[in-house]
Length: 438
Image 1: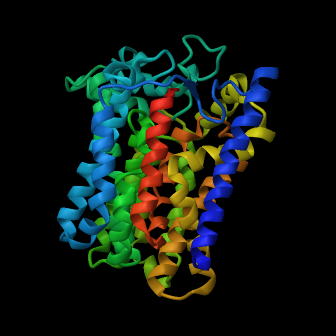
Image 2 (image 1 turned 180 degrees about the vertical axis):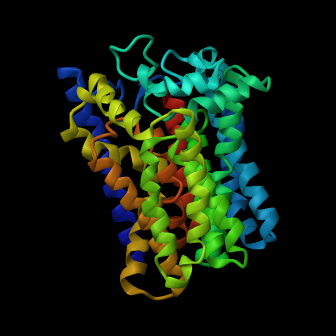
């Protein structure tokens, strides 16, 4: 066994130990004090071993990706590889979701009392609803919003309102939307890695993006949809700074970044990832005017209608501490959140991040340094979110937008099939032993 492999395995073992420690310590805290507000710490889940209609498909997809994924990633032409990654990711996500059945795994997830679909009928007059949005954030306000509606800017809720308006109402269509859009994040990441680093690294990362443990939460949560929007914003920025059409790609990137921060307040931290894209050279400032012009469109539109983002965020901070966020202990979650991250990105990604750090320190190949900047930028954004204290628990879904940018670190790992097996087994165990929810 060579030295690098020993270090990979040691890093993965340390990450596994972190998850076990978070589970043991968290269980004791929850049983004694009840302050964690989760039933199976560090995850918001219940212990419920089960099989379901998605089980055979999940096993088949996992086996196929482990057996053929690495070789196909090398041989397929680039565009068919992008399509194959998306289709495989969708098959993996759908099969994992259907382990819990159609209603529990897909259609019912976005119809629970604290979810977006509960308030669709309150948005008949869109301008009036947006003007009055902040007036329903606090718990003591009349007709206060459910937790997820209050906890996000109105762009998140508007998505499901507009789906309802075009005849795609209800939990089934909402779940289908989140899975279909959410799984495109892998394609966006591959495009960005190819543009910023090189195609070989993107190809090596492709099977890991298709078979990510994070798929457990992409199917189905709105955060999977948020992850895709943010991922495409970064992808278009990468194309803008490296391609021949910086104007329109920069403009599209700005529009998507603007929509991103109106989907989730915490995704303002994607500025860190954007900085990692722009960092390697001053010539990369070319698309900035178009990026900023595109970015301003969404905030100006919402502000013109009467929604004040900053005021809403201020009220959200108060609402957060009025609920479970004010009870959950920071001293536990500030490190247990990282255990949640290990579960969604898998042990292979943790080992890959170790190698990313090494690539940045050694500054060997230019492409590897650029990829290291990208994935470590995502890690920095995630750590800032962690230290903020505004992400205590449920980060297995909340941090999906950051997690998808950690997965390309797997491109550094030799023995892809073995690591893919580890990733698949983790996701299958989580979805078959636990009933996840939020």
